[in-house]
Image (cartoon, rainbow, N blue to C red; front, side):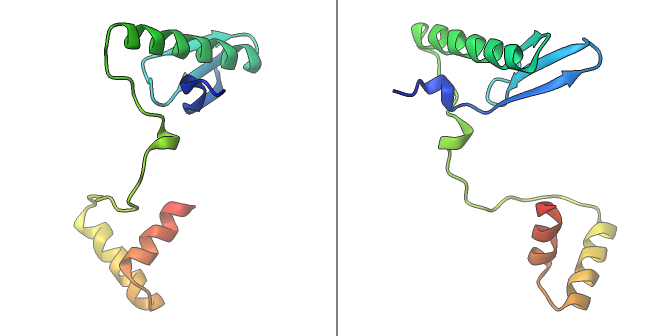
Length: 109
């Protein structure tokens, strides 16, 4: 059986500042774990998150839903300067496609 904390979004990266690997969890941005290897950093952050979720459940706090379990509409608003908007509109017109298609393609890269 998959533990709920296993469904969260984990990342491990090198920290120049700490000269160690740092384990992170997107759903719990205030938590981290430092370790000399990437494997130990991942194991550490997963344990910290598991303990945090257990503590939150014990205290009847709302536990974040994993990003993988959330539904996304595919729509969001982005504010840009009028110059950027104009540039993108011109690019779309010259390419014969919608502004949405130009922006979507840029975001995909």
